[in-house]
Length: 73
Image (cartoon, rainbow, N blue to C red; front, side, top):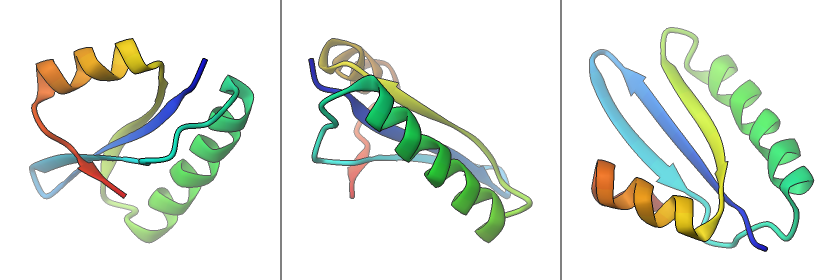
């Protein structure tokens, strides 16, 4: 199963999400990368808020349906 890392971030009342286009092979690899993304985002944007997820393809498809189009990075 593949896992897609998704970052949802809010700054000054504006929220947006991005995802990595190349999926991770294991949940462990995705979670390791998500911690690095979380740490970097908190360091670079200390007044922001957000969430980082590792989603399966099915979960990602539901996310896109619910939240709308995201931007691949």
